[in-house]
Image (tube, rainbow, N blue to C red; front, side, top):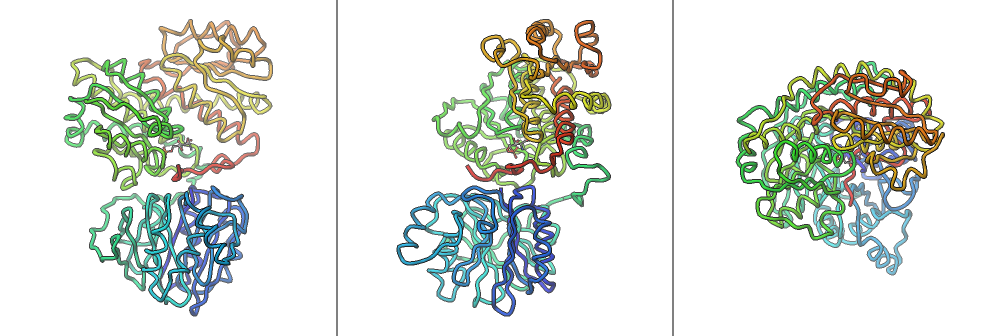
Length: 590
Ligand code: AGP
């Protein structure tokens, strides 16, 4: 949801900034821009569309200092005019976040005769800083941002302030790094790619970058000292490693992601502080968005089945506004791949205020969510570049199922082993080749329904979301038994149905729904872990039988072909599955 970069060093800034933007492009890709300072004058290049489209315009930019931005539109359509940096009276600003009082502030500025050049909420920041600038850029940034409501991470360049970048953070992530050069970036991998020592700014803090020096300041502009982050980022080049898309590469990494996520949790020393809380847990709320929410739906089924502890799964953006009931003994689990999702962070904060213990389950070390929560479990899926979550979802499932098993054991119950799942997932991946044929049928569909009961319902939800995200085909994930209560009216020859069956006990019930939709003309594709299910009913090529496994953990297998189906359909339709339209990987605004 917008990525920002800053650079001060000895090299020409524009190529370094472009490199940084490429690393952050997963955060938004509807327009991009760079501002540099050369001989005290601002030079700006902006383009609608992806970062690569900015490269030729950036060739003319001189100077060894600059700021840059890749955008996911909130206020104002994707266009060159709305692309950042926004410049007003010698002040250039890049912004990640949302300014909620932008309209009032803009009207105030316009009443004073100031002219705006974009429709964005962000431009007002440049105006406020320009109004307060009296030769001290940091002070002007402090005073200008004091009037803002909402969230922001900003980087500011100023004609006349020398070769310095000022930065401020509230509610959106920002890291500053130093080494031979100084950088700002919206995430750790981007900052760490350019600097040895990296510091995470906290909300309400400021930074100044000059020469090879990074200085951090608190809300009163007192300079603060902070230890650099300790990180062990494997040098992941973000490349496709021979695969045609990141999404395909990341699906191939699913078995390893599951294995890493399981190993991490089974290390008792790391797990024990959480064990203490689990012993006192009588009620669980899971807060999350999108795919992470679906991992919560799967976890609810597993936790309740294995430990008998009741679980509520909450869409994070709904949680805080409904005045949630948090009883004594409630553990809130905030699930987020990026750890930067504003809705999930807000829900976690709300739960803490209400007295819950809050556990973050995230894939990204030092992400904002980890700051808010009492405990943290990392899913160790590795960097995920494609916007559509695949391996990170599997790692979330593995971690949540491990948690379900641990809770069951603490409550004196047993749980089936998870250790076979990396190998089973490898097998499921190999068998998923079959869905290539299914994708041909889906590409001309009016809409696609995914149905499942019990443990399979989460898989149906996730299969449908994945298909919508990358193929743009409408549809729904639905409880198989509920279809006949209304939605069946939409089913016909042009609405294929994907049925998921990972649990023998309810197999026949889901198959009833299969018969019902087939009677209305729908072609049915069956994903199952149950040998021979569907034989004699459906054509063999429309049945995908996965290795059999414990039903409670079956989404670890059944979702794999659904992800593959979404990918294959997107490719057939000529879409870029790595960067679906209108979306961004990390949604840092509410
Ligand atoms: C997943 O494919 C989507 N890109 C999206 O639903 C995502 O899961 C959601 O925005 C939550 O992101 P998070 O896990 O980083 O919090």
